[in-house]
Length: 156
Image (cartoon, rainbow, N blue to C red; front, side, top):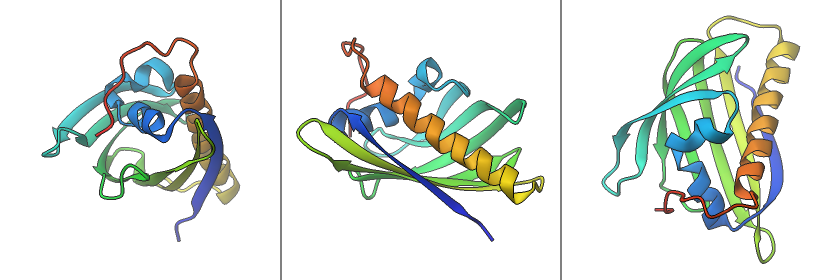
């Protein structure tokens, strides 16, 4: 049985800016503390990253995983499924973006994690909650940066 964890946050920034930050995968190591390296392995016909490999810190060690992104519901939703992983069997998720006022976005991050090594349920739930809350806090900080003149990928 797989449990899904969901976290929500309102971010000062348009849905377009939020999606732009979310899809600028090569820059994740600049603002997502646990992400150490990113490689876009494949792009779709519109030039968007389709298959992306990440190296991240997890459970006190380094882990690698590849995600296949789905833009079929963009710009309201960005979803992915794991295609490869050394510590995880499944790392599937969705960011849902909804305008929340003139210049804000409510983002709902849903994640399903299945580890290759079994962990007690409470440890797994704590790790899932940490992943989602940290990801949203770091995303908010990046989107809301005072110095927003940094070039970001154009939302596609």
